[in-house]
Image (cartoon, rainbow, N blue to C red):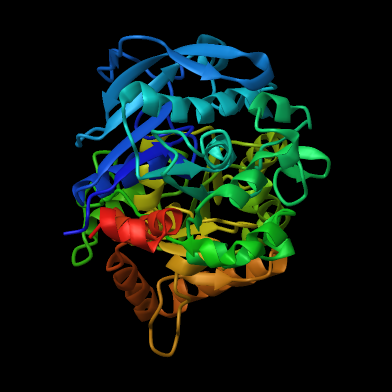
Length: 501
């Protein structure tokens, strides 16, 4: 049994309370898996007004939390306590109407809120002040992306000798390096850590205050959400200008692939699909395909390969490459269903494609969780042509649902999908490397040819994929080891061995 750690997660979103992306899945699942391993795990996040206090049984803690905000002065918030479902993990919700009493987590109408700098510095500083309010002395604080990257910055500066968090180690997880928290230089006065930290080695980048860069510099250890992404962000193609900083910290960088919540994503027990199925009996999957075709108004053909896609319609997801290739793809005998929303041009473009190719292409602009489940279950192939993908979850869902991934070989997609080997019938999907329309078309042609000409290959891919498991229990073991490394580095071996004999 591992020695018990006290761990505090500082996050901007966490399922099931509120979620916009993969970070929300991590913050909702990893703490539970760590708690199941015996650790004292707690989570702090904003109480956005989309989080219903009564629905989640939140209880107001006595007193107000005082949060110093540098030149702005002291600010205050209420703290509510709840629990992650199916666990005893405490979750502390910071209620501050000015910063969090609005719709949206990060912005509205594809624009970030103008005060996101102050909002998330407030969250970061409140995380540390909350420890004092609770009388909680964590061994480690786990921050995530730029939104709480100021946590390790504060820990290494203003809170270096704090009686509650001064001895704590920090881990900063990078879920998406593209978003860095890059703001005006004067934000240094809100941080209040001193302008001596506004240097090219710490927080300064392009004469701006870059919170993520500062967090990378100050964190005890750094993690990414796949091994492949951890390698990629050291290069100019994927580093977004921070590749040099990453390379300097490479000895403290660990890649850990996200897990899947198989309680939600399981074709044998999925309330959103018309028929359950399993690897040794796929009859239910045929009914799911029929229902998916019916729902989208496509011809109900069991013989045609059906390609599903659930995605944000943005450049990161390769949507521009798909747009350039879609006419050539639709010359093939296949069907495509698309669910998602994003850049406004994509809504008009793909709606027009659906009107031009009514027998082959349908799209639903927006998001629907039940429809996402039906697409995973009813499709034969699942398309993810991402420009970059730190981890990705839909390819893992697809494998569990016997839906063959067609992915670009980047980040977590490359780590979790093995390319089809026609000779041995090994592999779990189809992969391509170049981010070009030609590469995308060629790979879909390969998948469609295999569908029509190599049924044994398709059957093997389905069987191989459904045997894969990407569990949070496995990920938690790796995070646990990372935490011990971080605590040992922070304390030194002698003190570490005393506390954790």
